[in-house]
Length: 167
Image 1 (cartoon, rainbow, N blue to C red):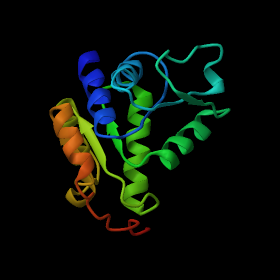
Image 2: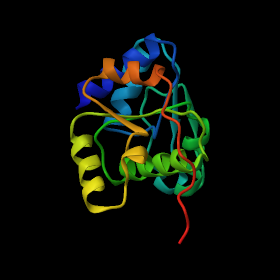
Image 3: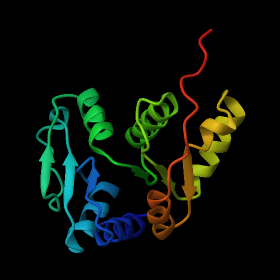
């Protein structure tokens, strides 16, 4: 998983993308390192809640909102698109928020790419156990490789249908 995130960062930087992540260890460090070693710009959105935890060493810029809601808002606002690799509850929160904001039209024309087949199992479970319809599910693209993620980022994102009906 580390290599996959590293390769994603490298490919993104080579394609001219800045890489924005949570800025800490694990896959965040891997994607940051891949981008930095390819000469790319790396932005870490850390959070004062985690002080004194140091960000990873490959950041070229750090933004530190005071709380998790601010951090999520900063990520949603600053990103031109989203690629998620396998992660924990924080990654899941970020993916679900981006997905919801795309579905309601609150985020316009930003691709949401889920890297790795583990994501397909999650999408399938959501379709089975919730009211997540095919049109909303299609706002997230599941891909198998970092190269496919780069291609999906460059493709026009699906058009959201708008807010769900209330009631």
